[in-house]
Length: 446
Image (cartoon, rainbow, N blue to C red; front, top):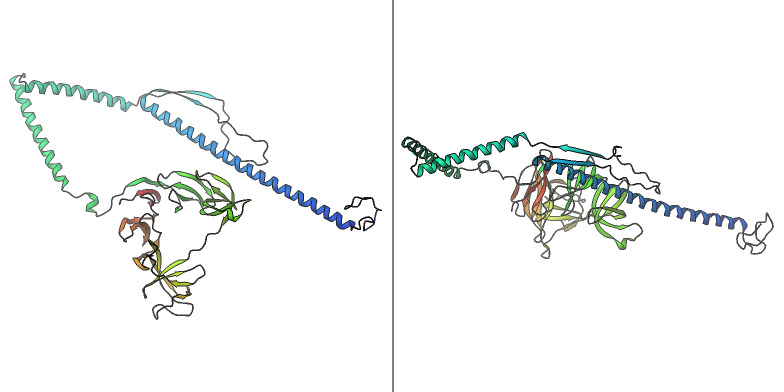
């Protein structure tokens, strides 16, 4: 046999090589471990390539599905227009092209189209019977108008017989009285209050009527929000209400991340979706891309309002509470919670002046309602009258009190009345609002 290290011939059964002195068993074990490591690395590379190919196949299937839906919508629109115009429409149903890839070990389950041959259907659409009746009525009205116009012309030229001249004159007098009465009524209606004014209620101006079905809609960016259906999440356009990404993901967040194979120093910031136990980045066109590693967001802490002070305190992620002072370099309003503070040393806010730094005993402190403070002055700006508050966006904030939601401005003035189930942050003068169990997009009038 040969030595595993120096490859020289040695006697069978010896423990050490007579040429190089190597331990035969140890050298064999090293060689076996090296081979196993190479095999493991090859398997990892193969799995990574297969995963990449599977994601590409999923993307192709989604694109094909959207293309088929677009074609179907175009066909239905063509049928509708043809029906209105009363023309013959020729429709050719084509079986969608199938995408096959025999090189992949992954199987993607898709809905198979019915196995039918290409068919050519000829649809004959007749004019709507009501349209034909309307056309006839218009023709009759035109004829009557011509007759009346002719009679009136003869009346003005005094070409009618004496009795007919008298009848037309009486009719003209009555018609003028009716017209005058109608003008008087309309003039009086201008001075009457509208229904909205009578009820002292803001009128609704919907950009998208409340017909969007969702368990929840959550703020994400200025362009899109997260839509939640059956515990799955997707993306919805803030201005049109169109579904940008189907609600089929475990979680959608806006965070920092870096791609697999890169380091945290190469991090990016954007929308990330969680599918099963993996995270994938979303590009600017809202297409799901490669797998990434997310970076846990920093805990920004919370703000409390001590009405005994009065004073605003900031409680950090490390549970250290400090007094908020005026900051003339910053501006804006931030949400805060009214709370009866008790420190971990047992000091209650109502009994003494609190130090500038301390820890809160939450088991003894009582949280109340929420409001907003001015970061420039460090003082409370909007009273803590709300049960829920969202951060300000474009000068407005979504708030909730006594189970009803509305929207206020930076002066605390009500912009959208408290009569809805939910309201969300304002983007481009519009906001998602829930009414009667469904979501819509309400215009925010300045």
